[in-house]
Image (tube, rainbow, N blue to C red; front, side, top):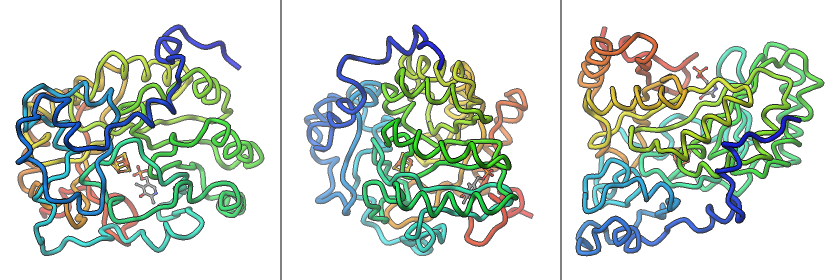
Length: 341
Ligand SMILES: *Cc1c(COP(=O)(O)O)cnc(C)c1O
Ligand code: SF4
């Protein structure tokens, strides 16, 4: 066990992260009031298209006051545009639903197996495939994990276990401990990767107990964060990232290219610079999954390529994310350049 770092103490209010989780804003009118837009009920759609608003207050505090086009607000506020019909968009854009409904293990790519460790998220991102998949609260928990882990144990080609979701950090730390205890008996698994948005949207989650668990894991550790805009970072996120790094994790960031949120070179360059200031390297810039209700966020491939070229011209190579799209049946994420050819 490591002793907790001073930074992590700052992050851990007496109430803990569960409290902050439960305290999230779920009423669209309350959200508008919180960002100084109480006079703009016209921004709200007639209904939330079956995917309710959910956003932690700390994330809301990073939104600009009185700005209906705020890039953080647009990621979480239900919009009328979600009801528009869009050809090519479906409820299962990545073709994973069948696999996700099973014991939660997706083994699509060589050497890496991805476990849907939890279906819960602290935030509901409007562009997410999850809006159409009614996960149970902890779909792969306990009994399910045994089955998934048995598969990982039996397949020595798996070098890396990826915890994903939903958000795997929505699980209690003792649940994560349960999950990773068995990995010690699998010498072929050398890396644990965690895909999570929580250190960004609810940095309180990176508390002393979690940091101690991560630090004590006898594996290489990679944490892939998810931030789409520089404004998502603040001192609380910096502190959470510092704790993750002190616990021995390599930090990467993946983003989704979103119309109106980060679809310009200045915004993307600022995101890459700001995440690196927090000790996080840009990893992927994803083209949107074509999920029903998200078409208004789409950026055309040609425009996306031009944006990444602009980034390449002004940033060090290590700050330029790889532009990719996930397609059913592919052996890896597909670089967009391959489409253009
Ligand atoms: C994205 C993904 C991975 C990880 O791919 P990387 O290119 O290594 O980041 C692994 N498994 C599944 C099922 C995925 O969707
Ligand atoms: S899975 Fe990620 S993108 Fe989707 S709602 Fe959860 S945090 Fe947002």
